[in-house]
Image (cartoon, rainbow, N blue to C red; front, side):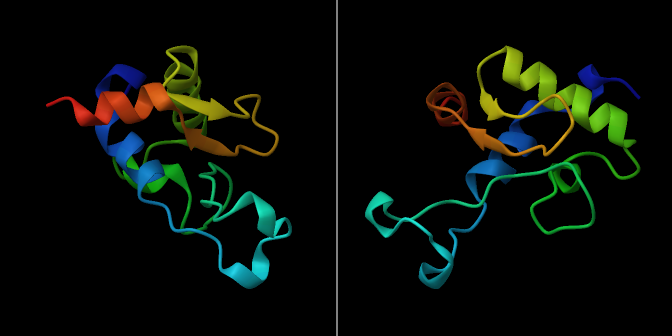
Length: 98
């Protein structure tokens, strides 16, 4: 399996549909509601690997996220340390096209 075998849309939709943090967890309330960021680390409900084909190895998951970041569809940490990914305006526009 390669990055090109993983479709973009399910990954971007996954990031778009992540829940917002509960109000009691928001450190800076003046910033308004904050959406949970996606990650590629561990077994968490916000792990972007859940939007990819089953069994995709972590290196491939991170490579796909790097490709999406390079294209400007997401932003976040693609070096592999913390892996917090969020949808960009360009990613949102991509999802609004058929």
